[in-house]
Length: 280
Ligand SMILES: [Fe+2]
Image 1 (cartoon, rainbow, N blue to C red):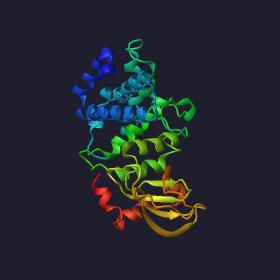
Image 2 (tube, helix red, strand yellow):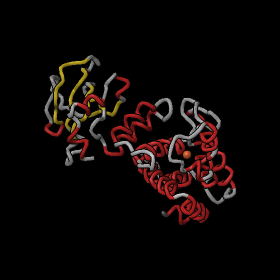
Image 3 (cartoon, rainbow, N blue to C red):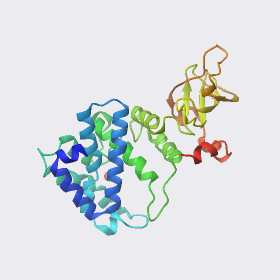
């Protein structure tokens, strides 16, 4: 909010967005909050966080020029409509250029580039990771998460776990791999369904969060340090049990299920994840 107040142009654009489309306006606010949360988590300084918030808030500004029947169509878009919709990045660039000098350049760039992919298969230019700024890569993650988890007229939003699962499979291709892992950690530290590597290099799935000790959830160890499957073992990390090497079981980092051929939905469908899952 501080940043918006200091940048009068952004207030004008936000008002226009709110008058034009309620969903996009709400979505933009969510993307702003999620982007700043991730930025804070990775330790960005205050000034960069302020710019990042504006980048999130104004990333979809181009949508004010997309016809309503395309923007809010309650069904699948035709090929032509998809083209029109995708054009919102170019429109965003054009609109925000009018505020050049009064909004940070990164805001204009994010509006233009937030649908680029790190593998270079995005739009509008199809540039790769090295040409996409960190702000834009953060906003792209926040944008995807909010779009997946929000209810729309034509579909119900995904759960947190489903969204993370979908996005995890996109990381390294669509989304920035390292930032995506940080995003999972920062959202709820290790929500049920997270795949984690322990300090002894074993791989486990989180099945229940310990509210008092979010860094020490209950897990099932699935793979040994050699990454071969082993007899599944439930460990409540909050109880500080020691492994065979005498080391206390502790999480080292989040990893991707796809890298270890782990099917998260199998655990969800079997009911193992139910308890922690429903509490999210
Ligand atoms: Fe967009």
